[in-house]
Image 1 (cartoon, helix red, strand yellow):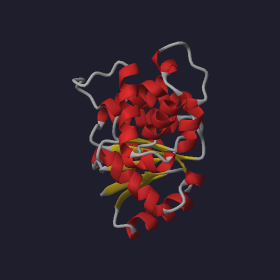
Image 2 (cartoon, rainbow, N blue to C red; image 1 turned 90 degrees about the horizontal axis):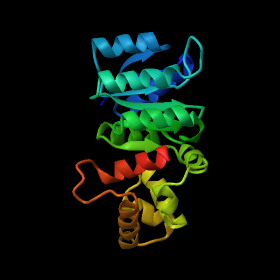
Image 3 (tube, rainbow, N blue to C red; image 1 turned 90 degrees about the vertical axis):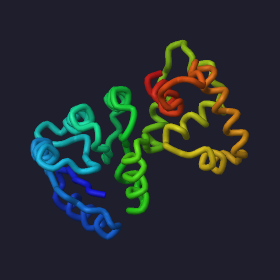
Image 4 (tube, rainbow, N blue to C red; image 1 turned 120 degrees about the vertical axis):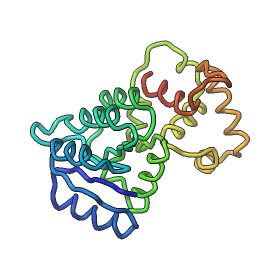
Length: 214
């Protein structure tokens, strides 16, 4: 898989490039700012981009704004936000507009390159990958009355794990349930959120998006 890395820290991006190449990725470009990243993608789009949220010149949400643009203009390029910061409001906007091929992980919680490699492969396949800390923050936000308020505490736990990109088996292992029980909880979640069996889009993705927007 061809990957471009964008981070304002030269030491971080060079070190990450070495680790990914050892994991059999091809690092086709490095960028220290959004403009350089945009040029790299325009000239030779990779399969995935790893980028920080806070980048020059203002170090606020340039990365998030660029991620929205990249997903709109280059839908085949997966985007993994790798940052020290949680920007919940802007993240919800990003995931709401591009509900696939997108991930958001915190740097200090990625314990090994294998975790990062797994996230890259999953978003390249069209999945959403969220850091548990990001999910926790979004889950704890006050919510207005709506379908999400009808979910039971266990259903909320299951949906939060879906938002992290876990499979039914992964959810079962995490909560000490059987896969069949997880399937039952998911049916209940889909029903309460009004996601019919014949809906054209992936119901897991739609459920996650409602969870985030709620």
